[in-house]
Image (cartoon, rainbow, N blue to C red):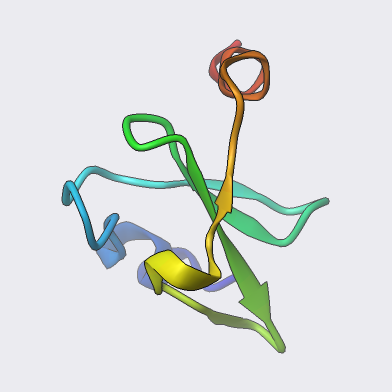
Length: 63
């Protein structure tokens, strides 16, 4: 994932910054508890494509 792209990407719902999970190929919004997939190095920033995270997953990411 390009670092410059990561700096400008934000959650399409709440506009907060995202956390890049390289091993899962996802961009995570802690506020909305959503994980947006990265397919073929392209972030898919659609709410319908995002995976919902439970509270435990969000807490693991935060630590």
